[in-house]
Length: 313
Image 1 (spheres, rainbow, N blue to C red):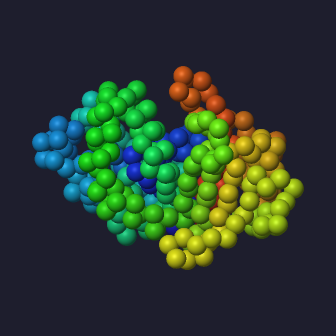
Image 2 (cartoon, helix red, strand yellow):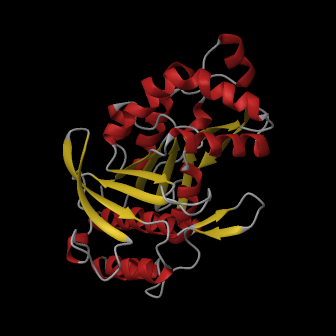
């Protein structure tokens, strides 16, 4: 079908960074061109009901997976949906919202790759896999500030959800085209929420940029801060794009130029001089900070969405 919406999936456990990544990709494409769907809205039970039933939001039985699949199918053909809304602050449901898909649709959440019908609706599938200790820090910070929990409640929730995460969330990694892991450098003297390395597993399920022309194992003019490596993922050989947390804006801009040259129409979304709006995160005290590994990750995902869009022009 020509000129249908391009759909990106971003799946990962709670507080894995899905919303941060989604926000950055939407900023590059232009928020007026993007519709964002959160599969958390399709919970079957509210917070009180889940507590009474002893079921976590990560369990498939706690979510209307059939309706998610139906709505994805409708969005893929350009049709509108009436989407439920789950309020994370109150733990209850708000009135549903009428959604008309834009040129690009980003679907983020916990169980977006749970069924084959869902998986077939995406043009690009991303899975976020931060180290568990780092994800726990992110979840405590978010849920205590934005959702009214205490740190003890969040940690207890993480412990109780562990089995469901291993059984239902983590296996979805196998369906991703790109697996993204942000992690702290081992030699970092003190913890930093911004100085994080990025490791992007590039599976051959979609065509990736020809990074090998610029990045070689022997070294490159980017000083080794951005490298293309060979590795194995789930017992299969893969390319891995490694980005050092101390990569500079000049190095990221160089990669951006390469992506823009490979996809000429990408230039309307990211300037050849570098887009200063991407890779931004909010610090612990509310300040806006810049992460270049995050910026490059957002650029690569946008590249894949625009490549998919070109197929259907």
